[in-house]
Length: 576
Image (cartoon, one colour):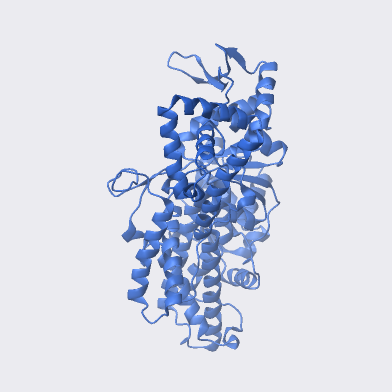
C-alpha cells in the first residue's frame, strides 16, 4: 500500500535497466502543488550532473522507460517531464479507488509489516528521589510516539527507561533514611524535601558526609541493608512516575526500567579490557581513553576519563556498558536514544570508544535523536514564576483545568462524566501534540492559547475533525455504505492520495524519529477532508452510489485520523 515505495522501486528498476548507478538517493516525493502532479521525481538533475549529460534528456529517457513498467501502468495515469529536469507523476483514479478498498477492508489500513528488527529505544530517564519535571516531557512523549510507530510496523521494540538510580547521592539519602524513617519519605513530594535535607546535611555536617561516603561504598559492594533502603527510594519514585506515564498515555511500565545500577557490575571488566588492549591508559591515577577525532584548542587528542583516581566510574563508563549490554544481551539491531541536545558530545565520545573497542559492530546503528527545550513566550527556558522548575504533574493539572473550562463552555449539554473525560483527552492531548508537532531538533515556545485552539495544527482540531466524521457515520445505516469507491473529482482525488500516504508517513517517523511528520500529515489530512466535505455532499449526494462512495471515504478518513493520533499516544473522543 506504500505508493511511494512502489514508485521508488520501479524507478530503481529503470536505473538498473539503463545501467545507471546513482551516487545520490533515488527520491520520489509527494508534490505539494497540484499542477506538478501527485508525486515528483526530483533527483534527476543531481544524477545528470554526475553523468555529465542534460537533465532534461535524462528525464525524458527515464520517463519513456517508466511508462512501460507494470507499476506505472497500473498506478499512474500520466507522466510529465518539465524543465530543467523534473518528472511529474499523476496517479490513476481507478488504481487509487482499489487501494482505498484494500485499506478499508484491513484493520491495519493496508499497512504491511516490515522485516522485523530488534530496536532498543532509550527514553524518559527520570531521576530517583525527584519528581518528573517539564524537562522530561519531550524525551518521554517523543520516544513513546516512535516506539508505538515501530511496534505497529512490526519491529521487536525494547523500551529502556534508563533511570538515574545510582551514584554518590544515594549514600547521603540512605544515611538520612536510616536516621529518619518518617512518613514524609513515603511519597515523592516528601522524598524531594528529604533529598534537599540530605544534601544540606552532606554539605554542612562532616560526620554525616563521612557516613554517606561509607554508605556509597557499601551500596556498591552489595550490602543487604543499604540495598534494601536503596530499593525503597527507587520504588517510591517509580510508583509516582508510573502514575504520570498513565496520565500521559505513555506505554512505559515497571518492566521497562533499566537503571544505571544494571550496568554497574560490568564497569570494572570494561575498564580492565580497555586497559589490556591499549585502548585506555593510566594518566595521573585515572584511566583515560584518548580520542583523535576530538581535539582541544591546542590540537591535542581529547582524553575521556572512564575511571577516576579514587576508583569511581563516570557516566561515560556507564554509557559504554549500556551500549555493550544492549547489543550482546538484548541483541539490538538498532539503538535510539532520546536525550537532549546538550548530551550530544558526551554520547558521541562514549560511542566512539564503543566502536573502537568493537563492543557494537558498525552494522548496528547508534542514533542520538536529540531534541531542543521548551521555552516560555519570552523565549526563556520554561520556569515557574519563582524561577523554579515546573513539575510535570502541575503542568498536566493546568492543562486539564483549562480544557475543562473550554468543554464546559462549548458542550454544556454533556453530563459531568463526559465533560471530565473530554477535559482530560483534550488537555493532555493538547500538551502532547503541541510538543510532538514541532521538529524535535529545535526549541519551541509553550503557548496555552495556541495549543488548546480548535483551529490550526493542534490536537483539538484533529480530534474535532474525527468527532465530526464519527457524527456523520452514526447517522447512516450500514447498507448506505455498500458499493465501490469511485473517485470522480479533484477533492476526492486529493483526499484519496493523502489517505494513501499514511504508510509512507509511518516509515518516515520510524526512520528519522520525527513525530512532527505525522502531526503535519494528520493536519493536512483533516484539511483535505474539510475541503472535500464542503464541496462534495455526502448524505445529500445526487446518487446513492455517490453517497456510498463518499461515506467510505469518510469512514477511512476517520479510521486513519484515529490510527495516526493513536501512534502519538493521544486519545480520540467519539463526541466533542
